Amino acid sequence: MAFGLFKKTEKKQEPASAGPHYYQLTVKKIIEETKDAVSLVFEQPPSGKIAYKSGQFLTLIATIQGKEIRRSYSLCSSPFIDEDLTVMVKRVEAGLMSNWLQDNLKAGQQLKVFEPMGNFTSEYSKDKKRHLVMFAGGSGITPMISILKSTITQEPDSICSLIYCNRDIDNIIFKKELDYWQTQYEGRVHVIHILDNAPMNWQGYSGLLNQEMLVKLFERIPDWGLEKTTYLMCGPEGMMKNVETLLAALAIPKEKIFKESFVTGTIDKEKKEETKAATVSGNTAHEVTVRYDGQEYKFMVEPNRAILETALDLGIDLPYSCQSGLCTACRGRALSGKVKLDEEEGLSQSERAEGYVLTCVGHPLTDDVVIEIG
Image (cartoon, rainbow, N blue to C red):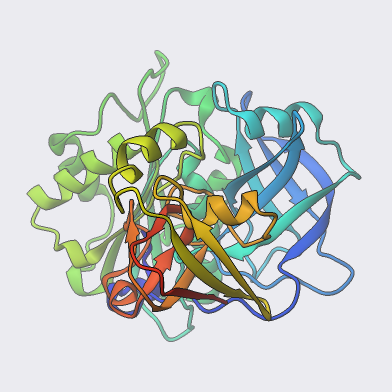
């Protein structure tokens, strides 16, 4: 889910530009942020700077155990003040890509990368005056620090308040950098840490974020009123649902709240497809036409298979990343026919009304499906 321009009605992903969408980026350096998290700093390609927006993600591509693996990682750099492209990778238990990157990638090596995408973004203007209240949990800090840096440097009258939840003090990612921004921009950047397991000398908040704690937190940050305040969240799904409930209890309108959902990859994808897709279109295969990058592809899609999955098996190189229906990297517009989606969270209501579909979770219901990507 996204907060394009901080207005849900304006959430819109621009069509991909013509030409190559993949880059071979050189790793400039690897920075250890915590015991389990590193920042991967990529040099801009010789062909020219890659344009991106704060809050977007890169899709990193690597061949692991003989299979091409793709995972999305939010950019923690800001396009306004950072020369290089930087993503943060945190180890995940049994995480194929996150562990491979940390165990194998070295400075000087190159990695295949799909162009920046995502709608958890905003436009910046020196004339804007707003208050961003950010809730982050663990690695959910990644897009938030990019947005914070861009907001503070590009909007001199805007402020940011960050409420950041972690297991313990050793797992606070970007702690030194956050301390710097709070000190350098005193009065405009407010950082409040919440720890599950706090040390004996901890002066801050600890335990689960509940309504009583949230009320106290709001007393510590500036009150600019609902008109000028926007609430952002990114982190574990449980944390975000909890925050949504707490904000609702404080009568914060839903249209002022925006979240970025980190996707889970394809670990449980096959089981989900078996239970969902098997009954999507009965026992009938349907022909699908996909137009992408100046080419047109026609192929049959079996009832228990997604459009993207079928295309990839046929060697058709369509854009994709999460394969979970959230990142929108595979988004295309259905010019004709009917497509059933397993997941719709990645698309706004207006996008669905305009006929946009996600090929990674899309199943054709008719034989006249024509999808245009980019």
